[in-house]
Length: 223
Length: 223
Image (cartoon, each protein chain N blue to C red):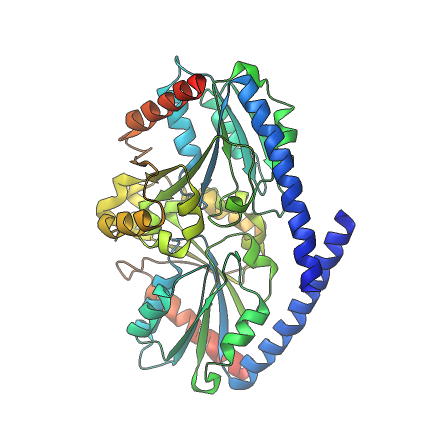
């Protein structure tokens, strides 16, 4: 029976990759930089989006696809925070977004009006990494409150990410987080991805992060 | 095809429940109180276990089954912290423990020598809730650093838990966490489960939590 199960799951993943490729073409044709944001519950995904919208308010038009098991609290937040457009996906019990869900959400967004589209995945450091959504950038978020051992415990996502953002840096004095240990174990998995340190609460590091993001938009246009 | 997929998954879940029932009998026959600890990555699962071992060091013999995607860092920690026995399960890419994994781990532990056995699930607020391990108590852990909106976003685990522990309470002054909002949304999902507030860093609340746990052991013996 296990062989049959694996077969079915493989079929689903292959079909996901086909839809992801279609999503990718649509994002690229519209000139919208798509970013898949993956992190634990409460790692600061929505806060990063809100700070980015604020930092780039007269420079970039930003849309958001919000993925949650339940509720629409984050979509309300990003619309109140100045997002150009936002759509909520509720996954039911599903622990990750899939390309078909994003395809459906894209039908309700005018991609041509956007420079950047954030896809906030369900809070989970494991399964979202297995499902491509057609994004240009896979971003992994981790807060200092989660501890410095996360790359050792969840290696796949840290190895696969294009950029890593360390959040809640304002809490560093109040938690046991050894940055040297964190950097070393992260670099053993992923030697090259940029690592940006931020605090959405104080605003520290948001300018550096937003600048990096604007550069990605420019590079995308050139390529 | 989707019908076929659901069929296969249902078979797997049914088989999981059968193994979970066997695990439950073994825990009960040995007189070991089994606690399935579920929480996000970095919510403080291992720290709670370590503090409990310390608080009950001359009163209760405690064993630990550690579930992680990769690594054995937590098993080393709890053994160094005074656990009577500990076994590591590495799930590979799997985002949750299953009853068959726990059954295998149990073969390497002398249950008769234990009063309490903690089963630390993989860091994930979603999928672990779908898989019974044969535990007597399902414990959900959430840190104040994760934010007060977690019950709204991840309702299933909060509704299903027998006890909820709010961790990292020492950070409350440094994060935006509205306790009234948290309690209200939690109580809408789960009106009766005890909610204990702790800080593993300062030790606040550990005595109350350990006392509650000792009571559970006593009640178990009576029933």
